[in-house]
Amino acid sequence: MLSVGIKEIKNNPSIISKGVENRDDYLFISKRGKPIAVAMSLDNEVFEHGFKKWVLIKAYKKGDLSLGQLSKALNLSYLETMKILGILGVPVIDYDLDDDIETIEKLL
Image (cartoon, rainbow, N blue to C red; front, side, top):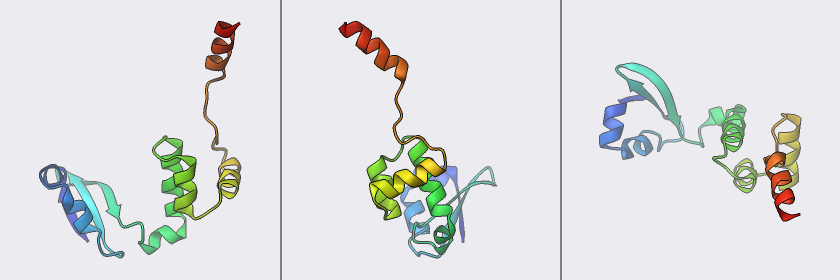
């Protein structure tokens, strides 16, 4: 385990990838000596116990991953991914109905 401060990361961002190159390593990121985050390899075995799925779905919900990227990362088909998202109550298609109605009204 390695601990690194925010200022160190600002000066040398590659320290993160070096800190997690080994699949069993993890890196504590601290601010003023207080741990605020953990970085680890996606190959770390902790991810095999559900954490990987949680992180990826959270990234999808925030818009950081597309459905295709999520499916690929989970090694699932689009349909299987959409089923999981449905079970978890995560919208697969995110759009604003009011925007669509407004567009239709403008076209009429």
